[in-house]
Image 1 (cartoon, rainbow, N blue to C red):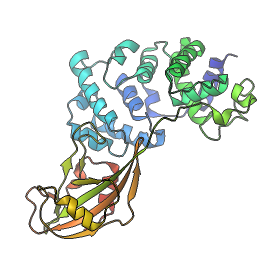
Image 2: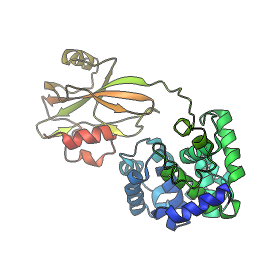
Image 3: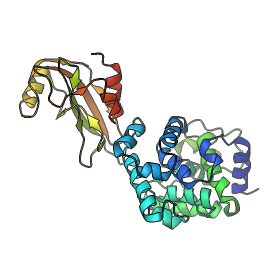
Image 4: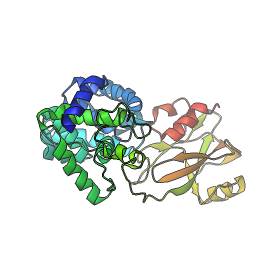
Length: 345
């Protein structure tokens, strides 16, 4: 029995019942694939259902306000995925008459759709013999064939794509692609893989050479940047506060936040007041209180945010104040959403 036949047999016996596996609708498959990038199935499942309830078709998503899309996405992280999702829906509607392209190359022309997502949709929806290569597939192939090329190097990416094509089952590409991803997620897991009961254990190079824990290889070239955030929660006598929208191409683009003072290190109250003095648009305040003495460290892929929240009682009613009860309707980073849940006025 070949490698691909063993994967298909295993998949037939062990596949999870997931909602996007009961359909060939490109919209639903695309939605699930974008959501599950860098997200576990258990975390992504509720969001998948919420999005389909709010946007049953690609037309509904294309016609939605970006803020609504970002609000529903809140908590999934990597918000560029949500913005690309919205932009792609508009492309499908305006440039393709509401129909997703039915080829790998056509799908790759869509915003936010790369090699993996195009391969997944093309194979699952249109039976195009295009192999998928995601984190799970890299792990299975690297271990089984004993490949120590870095998966995030140019050479490694090309090598694994060719290897995936060489071993795929073109006749049943839909189940095979889903099967090898499922195999990597469950059987050949990152930590504590089930090697003893694995149907590939008799010919797995990594198992034979005791390299399971060391494969796949990934270059570590990401330098973590530390940033220090001070959020200012202005509150007036009507229990109103201020929010601002993040602009530019940085993190959390177009999400809302409390007014922010960024510093080079953890600040005390005197340093904060001095920094605030450089901003003419801040309202006058009567009292300042520090909400959390210990900074909350919010870890993103390339940066760690050391965050403190400062409560400022204003001297007058805020001109552009937003009721505290209404701020939950704004799309905000999960760091701020957690604060809003815990802070009691």
